[in-house]
Length: 98
Image 1 (cartoon, rainbow, N blue to C red):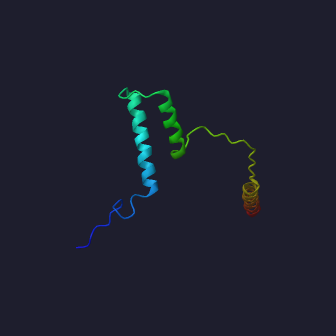
Image 2: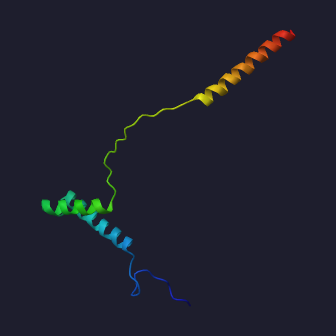
Image 3: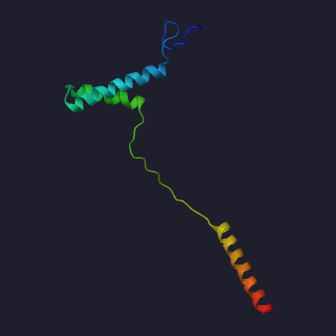
């Protein structure tokens, strides 16, 4: 039977991305415990955790984008005008027959 391939064994260890995720989850768990009142953290500790989390998690702050948007419906209008023109011609042809 073949040996199982395992990540994090003696040869190689865990990838850095996995280590970063584990550390981030540990910091979040620590802040959650502080919010629940299970652990008391000093303001400096909270600030340090905040700084470290900014490096690993995306900031969900509001982003404002300014600029002018110009939408042109000339193609749609041309198609609509063509359809109306065809309808007018069909009505005129029908009237000419009767």
